[in-house]
Amino acid sequence: MEKVPARIDPVDELILEELTRDGRQSVTALAQKVHISRAHAYARISRLQEEGVITRYAAVVDPVLAGLRASAYVTLKLRQHGWREVQEALARIPEVYHVSLVGGNFDVLLLVRARDNQDLRRVVFDHIQSLPGVLDTQTFLIFEDMDTR
Image 1 (cartoon, rainbow, N blue to C red):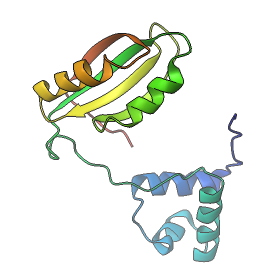
Image 2: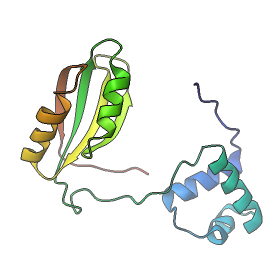
Image 3: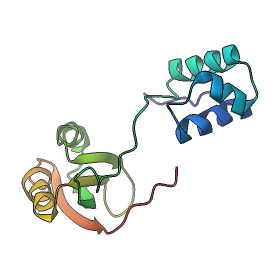
């Protein structure tokens, strides 16, 4: 099912920007920053949630401070028509933090975080490479992360 973009106006954009910066701020504080009433801010946030624009609220965790000292982007080449099965299996691997189906020289791009390089090796070799439908993997170690939002 194809997603249809929601109607987002400049006030919605400001609300989304503020919530992306600090999802824990009160609706009152957000309304003041966006220059609308609290009731109006609450109604807009509710609409954005109902329309699926805001999907969840989450803490941004520093992986190194959380004990995940090894991170990598892992690319996968898949057997034709293998995406659905691989997608479901990847969702069950706790060390896989993000999955993207992409176009180009490979089919899938993963963000994998592990305790150390030995643990990262275990995840890639034992869990990812062994999935039915995975033809090839390539691992790119991350030396340093920087969130821009």
